[in-house]
Length: 325
Image 1 (tube, helix red, strand yellow):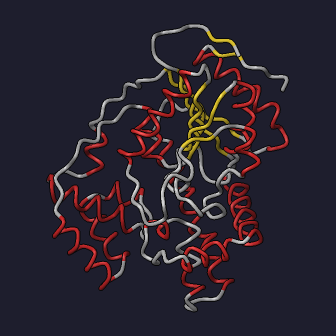
Image 2 (tube, rainbow, N blue to C red):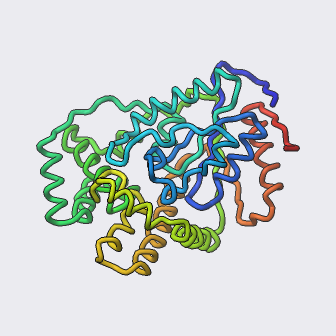
């Protein structure tokens, strides 16, 4: 790998896009060609014992390329955007100090954007009594009712959260209650200057094909043992309301294990929720104007896609990798 055009800022390559679009395969190839290491930008891959449902890189893939911010939390531990920033910055500094290229890969929009642009998340006032009041309201009326409350005061944030994401819904309501300002407005006021020499590449594909790939991925997860993975988490003592079970791929399987729906219904629910999640991911990333989009609909043209991406990286970062590997 060769570099030029230094400007004093450390380089950062970010690969983003919706779930099932092919970020993992591309990032592994790029990391090998560019002497890079991968920093996960996924809010759920931090959790141990949650491998299948989070589409975590396999042990073989992690043997090919070193990964960071994977398997660092227990399933009942919270993980915030501020903590992600702190750990990701340390990982990026460590990777760069060893002469390697940090490659941020993930689909959690707020995490990726906040890191790429150095958003400031100071400690905000908290109100534990109000938070517990919201939890009680959720237990009595359901998480959908909490989401409806958030939509009334902060429709932008509500639109970016799944209606079952109780923890983040409550946090957004608490921010509004404690500060009088919507979380979406706070994000809009953040500065837009990156602390990195940044190259943002977004992968996209035609909706019909993306949805087909999502369906195939869910079917593969079931074959690989997703139900057993969720069952083992419950058997280990993690309660169904633990942080981990808020994630797509887990909250849909729990009702099946509790006898409240059939496996076929749970699988269809998971496919539907994943499609909706992909739509929200694309909506978030399309607001990030600096992203260079690459349409990978024709996956058989992988080599051509790589050539275009290499050209973007050379233009943005001045890095020319080993394209023959």
